[in-house]
Amino acid sequence: MALQIDRSDLISIMALIISLGAFGVAIYEANIMSAQQRIMQEQQQASVWPHIEVDRRYKIDPEVARMELVIRNKGVGPALISNLQYYIGESIVPDMATAQMLISEILDDSDGVLTTINSFSGVLAPGEEMSVAQIIGTGSGKSKIATLLSKQWLQLCYCSVYGTCWQLSNDERNAGGCQELEL
Image (tube, rainbow, N blue to C red):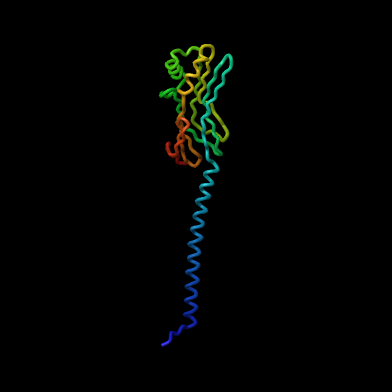
């Protein structure tokens, strides 16, 4: 017996093949759209990526020696700064009185050494910088400033506007070291 295919059966089979092909193309396009959406989200986050760096500045004049710790946002987006802690040695410095006490312990005498501490929590715009600590030595304090160079450091958390956070500690950056923000 010969297999007889009716014209309507042939049209139904062709419609089924075309439908399966269209279904395959739709699945392929959905995968492409998903990949494009992921790339767009990554580009969106990268377009506002903050990058905080610590800058240590030293200036020595005949009369004055000045040492300053500055944080600077070198990224392309604002940095939401929180939990900024300034350390001298292993001790957190919450205020100028504590700074003077710690400096006196390290130097055995803090005559001629002045300290300014700026605690900060807020937004640091791209390209903006802020002085966190400044130590000035005059007279006999000028020669003592060098002893403090390696004994001061910062620890802070900063986040992008999308809530991705980093911890910066003694110039080492760790992703995820801070609590992610919920925006």
